[in-house]
Length: 139
Image (cartoon, rainbow, N blue to C red):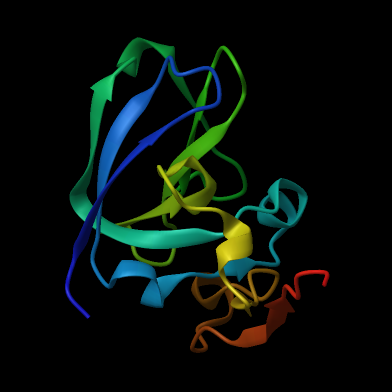
């Protein structure tokens, strides 16, 4: 699949951005690490330079934990997580699909869930798939 360009924003609209998803939505995933587990976002991947802040860069704030490698960005006004620079591959950004225009995390019947508790950078082992999150719309 080829790269797809999407416009996105936080909930209050203070932060507006453009994301070029390298594999479109073929790269969607969730993670089981302590932070992602609590955040619950479905993400898709953009390469370094693939997230351009169009408006509100001053409203963005960051959070880092554990090794401090991953940098999580969110709006300081409404608190919505927009994207983060990944720990396992710092040349990639994970973009919150719920922030993209016309996209909902519920658009995906199945979302792979990656094992972030046993992170590849901690174990030296390849990233392991922990399971699959499924959404079945009510009739």
